[in-house]
Length: 93
Image (tube, rainbow, N blue to C red; front, side):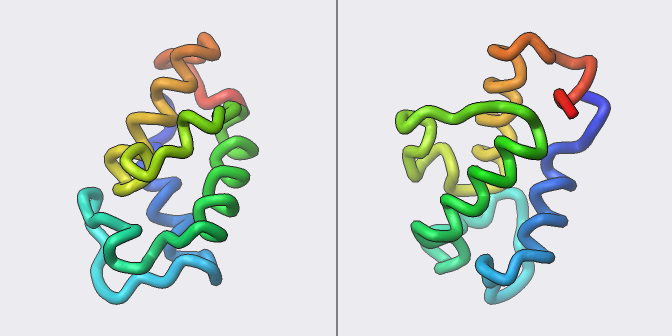
């Protein structure tokens, strides 16, 4: 993919007034368990991802396990991009 999804996620989280990181955030930090990602923050994040990457999430996609870490979110976005047919060529934006 031409854009690093993890970098986009880190930048979004760092600049978000809703997401609060209590310390260094790694790609495997469990965000819900650390209080970084609550239900309102999930909605904001999903809206951001849908707009940024041109994908749509279903209610099934919003399972906490799929949105727990930067790694799992990246995996979900890549899956959605693949389903959309974007693959490795772009991000849909």
